[in-house]
Every structure is written in C-alpha cells, then in structure tokens.
Image (cartoon, rainbow, N blue to C red; front, side):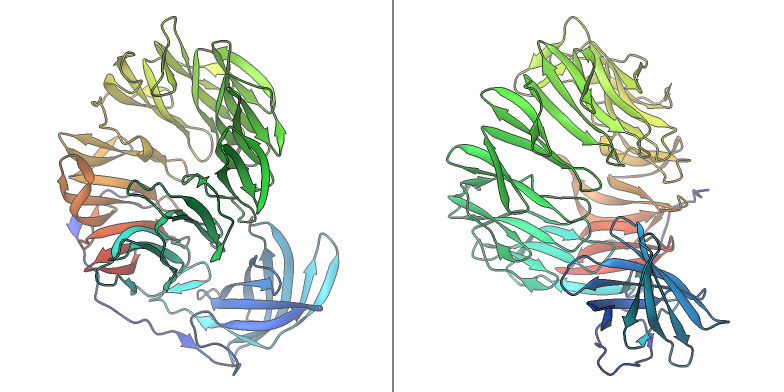
Length: 575
C-alpha cells in the first residue's frame, strides 16, 4: 500500500564513490565499467558484456551478441553454490526465452565458465568456447539497472561556455544520453554519450530506438531564421543519409523492437516513406507512421487527390474523406483506425467497419489486448471546425467493447488500467460547441463510470497525468486550483506546488513520484526558477532543471537527471 506522509526535506550527499569488488581473472578484460569477453557458441563468434552478480541470492545477469550483429540478447540466471554449477536463461529483445547456458562456478576466483548452449524448442545444442568470466559483485551501496552500474551521484557532462542546452534525451535504463546544443556561432551539435557531432545549421527530432542501440536525428542545411532549410537529411548511427527537400520533423520512428526505422521525406512536390533505407510509394501527403508493438507490421495514412487511404504493410485501404488515429493492440494482433465518409465517422477494426457516429476519437486497447474502446459523439448540431480539423457534438460517450456508456458534453483522455479491469477519463459539462471541444464550464474525473464530486475549471486537470498503478489498485492525476498544483491519489489531494508534472508509479506500485517547481512564470507553469523531485511526498534538493526520471526495475531506486550550475548530473536515490 502506498504510504502518504507529511512533506519534509531530504538532501543528497555530495559526490560519493562506490567501491566495486572486482576480481580480475582475465588479463585481457577491459578496466571500463562494462567488462567484455570474446568467445564462440559453436563456430559463431560472440561478445559478452557486463556480467554482474546482482545480490546475495547469487542472481546473475548479463548480455551478449553475435559479432556480426548489433542486437543484444539478455542473460539471467542463478548460481548453485552446493554444486558449483550455473544455469542461465537467454532472452531476446521481446523478453522471449530463446536458449539456455550451462556451466561451472569457481568460488575462489568469483568466476563462471560457460560450457554449453541449447535451444529446447529446436532441440539443438552447441559447445561454448569462452575464458572464465569474472563476476562484478555489486555492493549494497551501488545502484543498478539492468546490466549497467550507476554511482549514486555522477556528473555526466559539463556544458561548454557559450553553448546553450536546447534539448536532452536520456535512457534511464542505461548510461546512454544525447544533448542538443546551440553553439555561440548559432550552429547546432549533438553530444552523444559524451562525443560531439559535426556542427549543422539546423538539427531536429533526435531520438533513440526503444532498445537503446540506435540513435537518429534530422539535419537541415542553409537554414533561414524560421527553421526553413534548403535541404534535409537523416543521420542514423552517425551516418548521413540522402538529401531531400523536406523531412517531417515529428515522424522519425523506430519500431518498438528497434529492428526497423522509418521517416517521411518530400521531394519534387511528393511525400514518401523511407523504411529501412528504401523509398516507398509517393503520395500528395503522408502522416501518422505507426509500427505494431512486435515490429512486424507498419502503417501510415496517405492522401492522394483529396482522398485518404490507410497503408498497412504496403497495401492500401479503400479511399475515405479523412482517416486518423491509427492504433495497434499491445499484442500486435489487432489494428484499428477512424475513417469518415458521407458525413459519418466509423471505426475500422481488423478490416471490418463498425457503427457510424457523428464523431469518433481516442481509440484505445486495454494493455492485455482483450478490450477495445473509443469516444463517440452524436447530435444534430455537430459542427466541423475548419482550423482545428475536428468535429464538436452535443453529447459524447465511451463505446467499450461495442457498448455505449453514459453521455456527457465532452470526454477526454480515456485510459484502461494495466489489468484491463478499470477505466478512467475526464468529462465536461456545459461545453461551448462554438469555440473548442475542450471549452466547458466544469470538468470532473469519471472512474469506473462513477463521477467525482470535485469539479475543476478549464485547464485545471492535466490530461496526460491520469495514471493507474502497475498493479491497477491505485489511481492518480494532477490538478490545479488557484494556480497551485497537487497530486490527487486515490481521491485524496496531496501537497500543493507552483508546478507539478510527470507523475509515475514504481513497478511494484508501492511508491509514486513527480517533478515539482517553485516561483513559476505566470503564463507557463512549467518554467520555474527551481525544480525538485517529490518522492512519496518527500522533497529532494532543488535543481535548475530536472530531466527524464524513472524507478528502476529493482523497486529500490529512483533515477533522474538534473542540471545544476551548467552541469548535468545523474542521481540515483534509494527508496
């Protein structure tokens, strides 16, 4: 159960260096934090990195890859101290078990020697040729995530004098990071894991692949004041691609498994998709690039001669007046979108047309892929707002697994709980259809079809903050009242701050955290003089800025990145 306690301050110690107990067994082993070993499975050369003894239960974890491939396979297992043996399971990037390693453990040298590999499904077995691998034993003071070790407090970069930090991307599960900097000369450069790129006139949309193995961004040449450039190209893993008249700055897209990469380019008046380096069919316009969670399917919306079609795995659907909201189910087995034809909107689910309404939005699958919902609108006075490209109707309701729910003047940000058993959304009353759909006199939360008694003004509920805990037993959101923000957890309002955002739960659902600010600007509540983390209602030290943060999978630590005195630091705090 989450404990709600009174707010008080805690501070982090200054730089503290954690001692790793490392027994060097192989002279050729690197002295870097990620030890690396060369070997073979059968006749196939492999590289193994970062084999760690995680805890006193003799749990071990590492990863390896074939030398001719960039994809890492995760290794998890345990040491049998009675028999001095080791058994390690192998998992792919989708956490599917793909093999088993067996071997021996030497207590004196704290090392393991892997001797065989097998694939139970294919009934194959190969010998492993590796030197003895010494284990890195993690002290209780050290904080870990996956296979990477973190010091409690560590400076990762100092911004050079005259440079301005524009944007930052950090993978909280590893030591990878990227900074977008503006130079004193007005150029732009990316610092990737401490290495600075070339300087460019324009630089946009930089992103990591979900598995952290790839990094890409868009470069513009001969750019004008308003970010319009004469030519654009993509840099993928430090390699520059072909130049185009334009590249969509919001659509650099990696597949969830990191195996595919796509973006939208434009040349000679036509738009087209570049998928894994290959140009696809040209259209007047393209948007909404979408991969399925398993990376096996790829879709987007194409416009040609005023009509829209959905392109799934290279095949076009029928033509519509408009199409939008492409979505795959989490298991990758279902695909849906909204289309409009002859004045009516309807859902296409797995190729089949569903019931028509005056408006449809917010398509959502439950995390277990067993339920499907969306928000529908009806009313004789539905109005199409040209400058917003959306419809406004008199009444909206949730359609859950084909069943229509209670009607409201407005519904926003429908979500499922992780177990698919609970739903929540924001509803509005007395909405003004002649302005914008979200302009209502009052707003309130609907949880499992029950309306909250508390009502809010326009903009006072952070739509993106609606969250269920991973165990689906807690529900929270961030709301504002009289320019003060508070987390509302299980119906109870917590401490109020000038700003609050990025609410998260720990994997075991026992803790929650968010970023708060003080002395914020009147017209931008997220621009504040100082920021701090609020962890279970305890406030951290204050910083100039706080970037990505997350709970580690061990449920014992919170990791985040801060800017202080032009230096970027990684902080790992014990819960």
